[in-house]
Length: 296
Image (cartoon, rainbow, N blue to C red; front, side, top):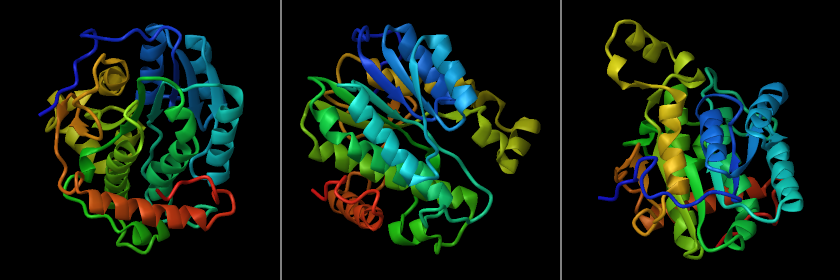
């Protein structure tokens, strides 16, 4: 089994490299942005809240972009802006995510949790694909996963349209399972200079946890005190995957923090390809996305 070196071990130089971190106005994303900046990278902070996002960017002397992943127009415009304003991306960290209490459709007609956690990063990464492939010899796409994906079988069409049985945990798990399949498929079909990985950051005290009654109850009664991590600790694997010197054993893999954790069917190429094709068809139905996503 592969293992990610923890921070401080066998790191490549990040000085002068360009790192884009989504969902970086607070929590794990903000911590990851700070950690990359501390290593000399130029970080582009992406968030939904303009005030919070600007504060994070100012603190690390980076740039920022505003995008709401519940609106695919924002995601499409973000991708176009990055293509126009920078000439390379060394690390793309797809961290933006959220849980929602109700089964609600976005303005794009997709179930909100599934769109924010899966369809939006799928679209953004696809728009940036050629730039990533052309950016150099060692480019990383790092996706934030979740243990909620374990044991889940995702029906992309039903999950996206909001017709699957809904709970916020089930919808979140389906989105993260789809993202796991996307990671495997993207890594397999890009040139060897691009490495895509996905990591569960652990049980972190972020807004997602604070909005989860069951997890809050477990925190209050002491059932899980040893597993609660700070945002900085949670960001560790997401940064390690971007800064580790060697990616030879990391391509397309899922990690539970620093340890590889094979997810059932995640390595099944036929399943990953089917999830990809269905996702492309869903997104291609929008005029915003036509022609921006490869079906290959």
